[in-house]
Length: 154
Image 1 (cartoon, rainbow, N blue to C red):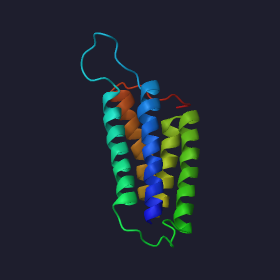
Image 2: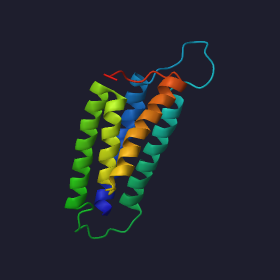
Image 3: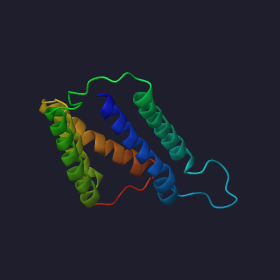
């Protein structure tokens, strides 16, 4: 497990550095000169720096300050990998639905599929939550706050 911890923490550290030095500067807008207050980049930088620092700390701690142990067992089994694969497939499908058809079409599918994946089998709670949550979010953000949501068919 120690080797898997070191490898995963190193990958997360590298990803965090890419977020800090590439993704945030390119994709998160900054201020015009003369504006006041926090920049839009400040909170993402704080989160990315904290996440990256903790991952780097974990990698160094596992590499240099813990006793080596036998790494015979895989840290994730076949069932875990299949769960991750199914989750990735659901995210891809629901992203396409959200992108092409909007939140009112893709949202219920996503909520229902994840509820079923997490073990809910009763149809009434699945239907109520899968239909209600996206509609309430849509009403809250689009109608009440006048926040523009991605356009779709709906």
